[in-house]
Image 1: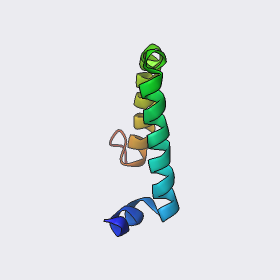
Image 2: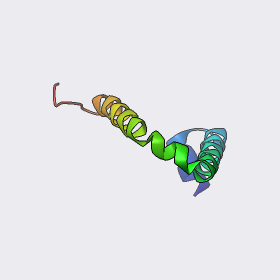
Image 3: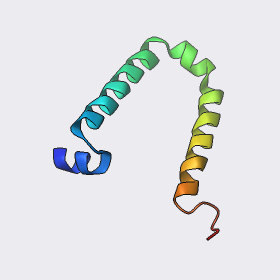
Image 4: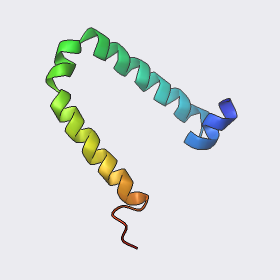
Amino acid sequence: MWTRLTQRLGTPLTVVLIAGVALIGGNLAANHWEHVIGFAPLLLLAGCLIMHLFMHRHGGHGGG
């Protein structure tokens, strides 16, 4: 399991950092839910923009 994660994400430090950020983000979201709901439209828009950028790397609009 550990080798599979490190093959996909890089070094073990990367895996630990991603897990740490996920834990801190989850804790902040749980304790400050009212603020998260206020930013939900902006988070959705940012997620769409980021997904659009990553999709261009993997083929994009079919140009090629």
